[in-house]
Image 1: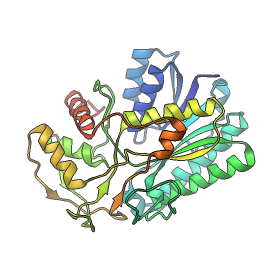
Image 2 (image 1 turned 60 degrees about the vertical axis):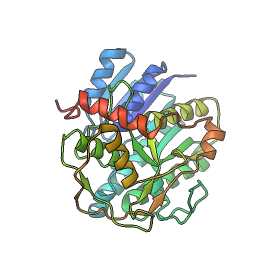
Image 3 (image 1 turned 120 degrees about the vertical axis):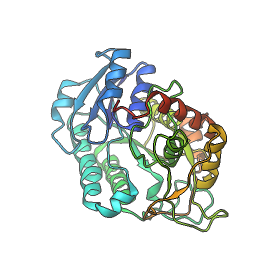
Length: 336
């Protein structure tokens, strides 16, 4: 059983935390990133910590010819595919980018994998594939009806993955993330995007007076009129990927699985929690409202528990505290 994984988007927020976790668990990681939104610094930091023989870096776009990577790294057993464009708002303004990067890049990656006989994929998808839901808890059987090109591009990729599974022998676990937050507990790796697309990150940065904080939600039909989301810690999320890789290596069958906490918090509740922990009252400036938003999204995590034996271990408070540590160590992210 080869413990060599290719991680795409390895320089990004979630991908760099994943790389750290896989290295800690004894995997060799082949890191792929075009560094358009990801960063080299976290990967170089991890190379110093674990050695260049354990972490190799390729600067590549998923839409480019990837044959050389697979040619050089013949021991890759599994691809963990995080690379892609991720902003709902941007996808409403520039849908072309989302279909080219997310669908085109994934298609190219899949074809190259199969050409080199790599048949295990863990795919990073999103709850945005569900669109608006009247269900208080969303299970994997919920209809998919994306309300923005970002969600649509992820659902299109999911479908390609499913067809490749049926027809070409690809084994996959597609993980549909809910709202990702937090950093590693030691403050070594975290979110470097400025501004971040993540509410908790922006609220913590606001409380630490690193940048002004803006409320960007549209009013919705929830008790406090702010959207309810399921906030899952980034290390918990990546532990699900680790379990998914091991599940595939042990011969598990293809699955689509939600990754969240099974409970929700409204935007205003989360802001209050950040204020409580930091002891700072945030200026709630009204920013430009996000487009393509929905009122409530909370995951059913029953399937994740049953199939991957995974459940989240870290609380909302743990996530906020880890971000405080990360931003105190890296006030400007990786751009010191």
